[in-house]
Length: 107
Image: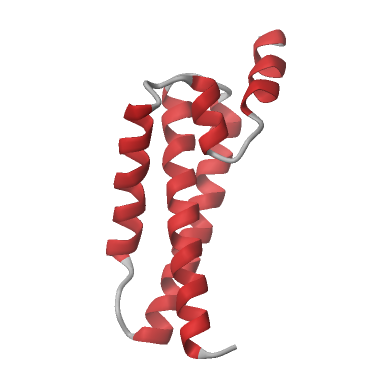
């Protein structure tokens, strides 16, 4: 892999994982399957932070701005989705209708 490929990959992974972590944090705050959402939030943040460290190692620069931009984008998308649980699940990469149906059936 070329250095530029590594930078692009790390940047993409930071954005994706930071975005997903923020959506999961919101779902947890809404009370939807809080334990599982906290788990996914932590996993995605861990992946994002790992990629931030790799990017810092490769470029010598912090990747905090990339993380914060993804977080801000997630917050804007959460507001656009009007805090709709199924839509938020879709945005986090889950099958929203199916996940929601299973969780609410057993709640």
